[in-house]
Length: 606
Ligand code: ADP
Image 1 (cartoon, rainbow, N blue to C red):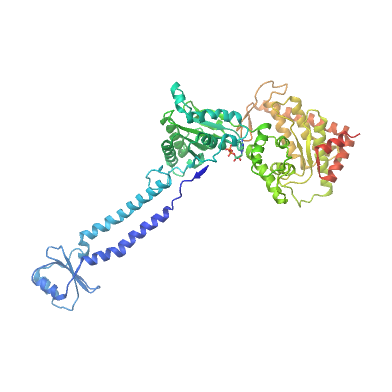
Image 2: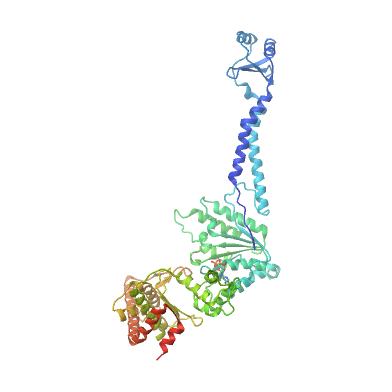
C-alpha cells in the first residue's frame, strides 16, 4: 500500500518569514511612507506662511537640522531646512504658532493605521496560506487549524494494487474468519442493514507481540478496499493536557470524512488503561481515553468507520472501553501452531531465494514457540548468512543456523574456553540429552553443541517437537524437570563438583515445578486450588501468589521436594549409563557440534 504520511510543516520557517516582513515594513517602508507624506518647501515659504498665519504647529528638529510644520488645519505636513535665523522664535510668537505638543511626524493618521494594521494582515495572510497548503497535502482532510499542535498525525494508507491481503497473513485462520465478516460488511452494508444488524464499532485484536495483529488490520482494509488510518496509542499521549483528546477528535473527523474506512490504533493500552480515580492520576491519558469513548458513542453503528485496536495486555484495559457498543468483539491472535509456523516460513521464504530441498516442516518443528515476527526474522537471517558465505540461495543449514542465532545469539568466534571447561560443558550438555533420551516421554534431541554463543550460553541441547502439543501430563512435566537437572547431575556424577553453568536450568526447573503445584493442581496437598494468578498472559506471563504465608511455606517445601526427586532420578539415570555418558561426551568434546542422529547412533550401538 502506498503510505501517505501527513506532512511535517516547517513552522519556524513561516514565523521567520512573517517576522522579517514586519521588520522590513517597520524599519524601511514606514519611514519611507512618512517621508513621502511630507512636502518639502524652502525657508522663505516657511517664513511667508508663518507671517500670513497659515502655519498650525512647528517642531524644530535641531539634530536633523530641519523644521517640520503643519498647515493651519494641520492636515498637511511640511519640512524645510534650518537656516541660522535669530528672529525665528520671535516671529513664531508673533504669529501665535505653537512650538510644543506632540511630534508632528506621528500625526499622520494613515501611517499610524498602516503601522498597526499591516503586520496583522501579514500574519493572517500567512496563516491562511499555511492552512490551505496543509489541507492540500492532507488530501482535503485537514481543518484550518493554524498550528500543528494537537493535530492527529495518523498515517493514511490509500488503497493500491499491492495492498496486504489475507493471503499474506499465514496461519491465524480463526482470526481471519472472524474478520472476514467485517470485510463483507464493508463491501455490502445494505445486506446487514436490511435485517437491522449493526457491525461492532470496535474490534480488539489481542495476542503476544509479533503475531501479525498490525498485518491483519491492514489486510482487512486491503480486502475491503477502503482507506486505512493507523496510529499508535502512545502517539496520543502529549505533554499538555487536552492535546491527546484533540488528536482523537481530529482522527475521527478525518475518518468520518473518508468513511467507509478502517481506523487502527496499535498498543491501545497506552491510553486505554484502567482509570485509577485517584487524586493526581494521569490527567492527560484519562482525558484522551474519555474523548475516545465519547467519539465511539458519537457515531452511529452503521456509518462505515470500523475501529480495530491491538493490545497485548487486554486485562489492563478500562472496562468502559470493552463494554458492548465499543470494543465489544475480541479476536485472539495467538502464537502460531506447527502448521501456522510452516505456512509463515513459506510465505516469507517466497521473498528470498531458497534451495529446493528445504524441509520447512522440520524448521517449523525446531522453532517451536516462535512468533510470526521471529519466523520472518529467521528467514531473513538465513538469507543474510547465505550472502555472507557467498551462496546464491539459502539452504536448510542456513535456516537451522539462523534459528540458533535468533534463540541463542551469534557464535562467539574467538571465545577461548580452557580444556577443562570444554570437558565440563560437554558432559553438561550430554547429561541433558541422555536424561531426555532415557525417559520415553521426552522429545528426542535435534542438536547438541558446545560452541559458545553471544547470549552467554556455552553450549546447548536443542530438543525438537514431534507434533503439536496442547496438553502435558504430570509425568511429562516431571521428566522435563529431570532433563533440566541432567546437566548439573552429569557434572556431579563425573567431576564430583558443581559449576555456575546450570543457573538457567535451575531457573526453568523451579518455574515448572512451581507452576505444577500452584497452577496445574498436580500436588496431593493442595488439590485443585489456584494458588497463583497469571499477570500479563501475553507478555511472559509472570505470576503472583494468592495465598497465606503458611501456604507459601508449604508450596516452597513441595517445590524443593519435587525438583530434588527429579534431580535424584537424573543422577541415577546417568550413573546407570556412565559408559554411554563418557563415550558421548568424548565424541561431543572432539566434534563440538553433533546432530540428534549421531547421538542416537552412539546411544543405540552395543
Ligand atoms: P504485531 O502487530 O502483532 O506485533 P505485526 O503485525 O507488526 O505484529 O508483525 C510483525 C511482522 O511479523 C510482520 O511484518 C510480518 O513480517 C511478520 N508476521 C507476523 N505474523 C505473521 C503471519 N501470520 N504471517 C506472515 N507474517 C507474519
